[in-house]
Image (cartoon, rainbow, N blue to C red):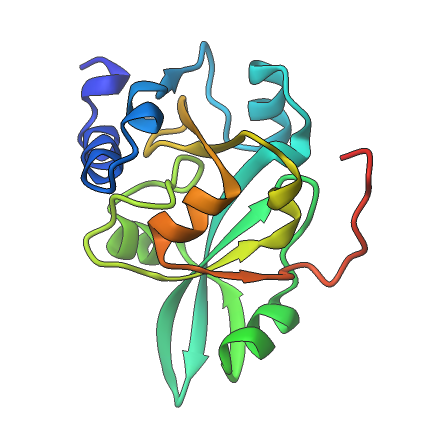
Amino acid sequence: MSTLAHPAVAGVVRALRAAGLDSAADGVRVLDGEARTAALAAAALGVPVGAIANSLVFAATIDGREHPLLALTSGAHRADTAVLARRVGADAVGRATPAFVREHTGQAIGGVAPVGHPAPLRTLVDKHLERYPVVWAAAGHAKTVFPTSYKDLVTLTGGAAADVSGEEDDPDS
């Protein structure tokens, strides 16, 4: 099966088209190798690492129950779980297991897209991504990415713009 025919990638393309983002859907690229990190994706695309939108799924504990939380973080930042917890009113936010990620996204860690999930996820979008005219996000598989804009990413996910790292911006990233 070609990577573009992968069910998760096809789901992302359907979600992009349904949102009216045909240029993003048409722009899905298959990379030569897996790009499971922002640095690998940036190198493969020839873009700054900050222009990569990492899709990080966390387990947010609210009232004793775990809920999925998607943080779309600039590749130039690390998500701070304490900052995330404050932003969503969670008692705690922690790393999600691979099984938890697959259950809530239908996708494997390293290729999780911002969309194409079985149900919408509560999403925070790193404000740092706004400085890039083109932002690249995973397209459902570790070898696929698609181009979009910060504004479209926020709209597409129904996410909230947020500082997700607590770090000061690095103007060179």
